[in-house]
Structure formats: structure tokens, C-alpha cells
Image 1 (cartoon, rainbow, N blue to C red):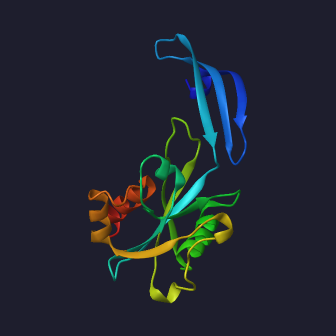
Image 2 (tube, rainbow, N blue to C red):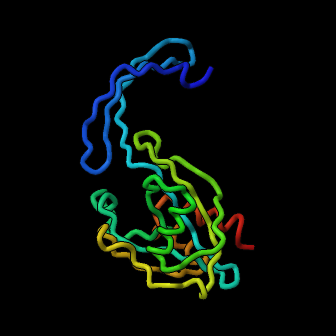
Image 3 (spheres, helix red, strand yellow):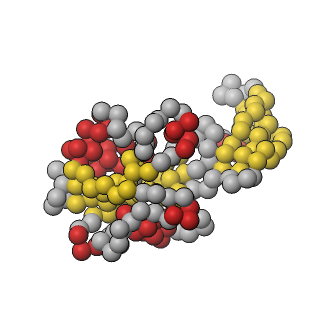
Length: 193
């Protein structure tokens, strides 16, 4: 039996579409014991996205960005977030979008970009699926200063960190962004000897 056989959507109401879409849905879910249970959920749809960790095996470094994130601030994080480059797909293919986003945010025009996995980041309420990429970089690929798009409110600082320092920053609570932690763990396990 597929999930489609276990769900009957009864009502979907739009709560907000100011920037992204927030809906409330009433549905019946067929539990494992065969009983149908009515449930209510809100879903926030901001589209799917992509993220990328640029790394140098030769230098044992990674390129990350640091920027203000209002939702993290209102949840008690009084600092800029250190993150892997990322952005929404905006109807583009994931690889094409992450190439453009990485260049805009970090200033690097990357050659070989490799997808390593996909993940839902907060599937209890947010529909977004992220496509995770890695790419090796070197100084010759630096074509600009990065910094993001000011028209989108981005004010980004580019960081080049040793992989060991970045891993220690996770343990020390200085890197708290989930997508970045996932990519750094991937790199530590699979890329850096």
C-alpha cells in the first residue's frame, strides 16, 4: 500500500501568500491498524532549494558564507549564521541554480559540481527539499568578491576556513545551520583523508 492509498485530503485553506505559501489542511490518515484518523496540519511552501560546499583538498579548506538570518535571530540566535552557499531553485535545475548562487555569494565560478544527496530539512511543516552539492575550488576560479545580491537584502561575508576549524566550530556551537553541518560532515567523511 502506498502513502497515496492511506491519505484522503478533505480541505485545504490558504492562510498566507505574502512571500511564500502557508496553507492549513484537514485530511484523514489511515493508521497502521487500519483505522482512519482526522488530522490537521499547516504547511509552508517556499519552493525547493540547493546548497553547495566548496572545498580545496590541497589547502584542506572550505568556503562558507556569513550572513544575518531574521528567523534565527527571533529564535534567540544573536549573531550572523555561518552557512554553505544556498538558494531557492526558482524553477531552475538544481545544478544550474547552485552554480549561479555559489558565484553570487562566494565569488567563485566552480568547474566540477557534484550532487551528493537530497533531503527534506523540516518535513513536519515545511515542504522544501534541498539538493546538496560539493565542488572543488582553487584560486583561479575566483572571479569576484561574492557578497550576495543587495537587491535581495543579502549582505554576505565570504569565509575560507580549514576543514578542521569548521568541524570544531560545529562542536563549539559557532556553526548551527543544519545544511552546513550536513555538508561539512559529508566532507569530513568522504572528501578529506
